[in-house]
Image 1 (cartoon, rainbow, N blue to C red):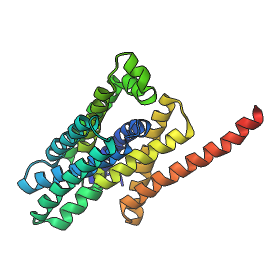
Image 2 (image 1 turned 180 degrees about the vertical axis):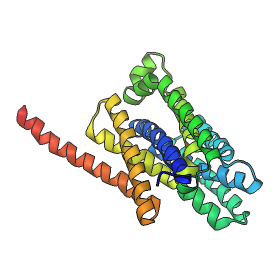
Image 3 (image 1 turned 90 degrees about the horizontal axis):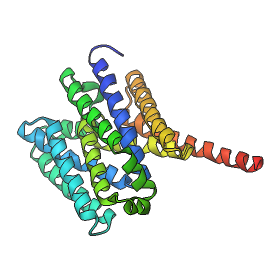
Image 4 (image 1 turned 60 degrees about the vertical axis):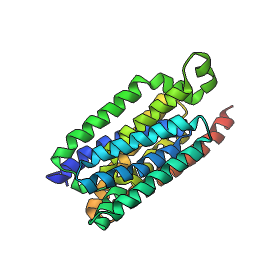
Length: 268
């Protein structure tokens, strides 16, 4: 389970889980879960186009993901944010459909781009994934305070001279970078589950930012490791374990919070 290609799987998937937990926390906190869904799924078009012309898939993912993030960020302030996000997603999916229809490896390529190929991570892919993961983590660390301030108190942030629009665009670009290194591993569809499930579960347990962020990363790692182990033992689809794992952790978090409320009322 921990030798050969599986060793690459554990390393790459762990990096993906950490970045998914970090970016997902801010996506949930900022109410940008739709964008967290749109960018990975829309970036599928870049991967399909890159595969079609023989370019590195990560390059295609990065180009389209960044373009989508810039489009959502630039136009989101001029119209309803959800509408712009939806239109951007539709456009990118349309391009992806064209690229896939032109490919001679339709079924295999489409499945791997949508659901990932976690057991097919080569040694050469580990370094780029780790590098992009480190870049995304550093980007979040550098802008941690502005991200927190514009997420929790946008009016206060504007009063202090922190542009919420610029921070929004910055965070969307961070999500684009995260998407570029995660889609080849867990796929466009599973990335959304791995970003939102752990973050929502963490926020349901605690409102303390630092604790919630750390918990989101820890849950994402737990889901990823458990899913890989179960996939290896059962040969069931990895997506089943990732998706249900995120939902179960969230339900457990909600249950824990509801149990904690009566206790706090009793003590008061």
